[in-house]
Amino acid sequence: MEIIKKGAEAWIIREEWYGFDAIRKMRIPKRYRIPELDMKLRMSRTRHEARILLDAKKAGVPTPALYFIDLESGSIIMERIEGQVLKDILDKLSEDRAREICREIGRLVGKLHNNGIIHGDLTTSNMILSPDGRIVFIDFGLAEYSKELEDRAVDIHLMRRALESTHYEKDDLYFKWIMEGYFEIVGESAGKEVLERVEEIRRRGRYVKERKRQG
Image (cartoon, rainbow, N blue to C red; front, side, top):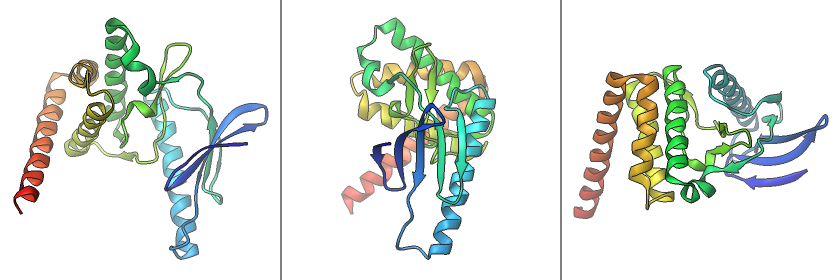
């Protein structure tokens, strides 16, 4: 057993599960909560994330296979995905390969949105390029079900901001390619609606920042 990451909400632990190399995502009890409420919340969020993982896979989006769900401990035990985290390699790839990968990211996000799934944390840290060339989406802890335009646009907006932060030298190009793939899946009309709402969200953000500076 090896603790890979200690987050605010959950620990990520590498372990063996009946001979399989596995990852356990375990939601940690919060001492400031009433114990009964804490357990109910952790059980509910664990069940919710597991369901979304399965539904994302049904939608054609590669995700880790689920091995076991332990509601009492707030744990999901899942396949450990071999490969490279896209955050670490995307900027090092040739332009043709980076374009291909970005367009595939867009297609996968489009499949999620077409099936009413909002990932909630679309960063290249949560995407793994597997040895067989698949892009696997991980960490659906913030995911939710929605087909609302605003929610889809927020998902894309947060992804764009993550690109600006992590891949700032090529973020515009990456975003353009991702949206090309996204449009392939959701269609021209729906894609334009989402992009227009993303720009509206960005304008709102700039307005709030300006008001804070003035006030």
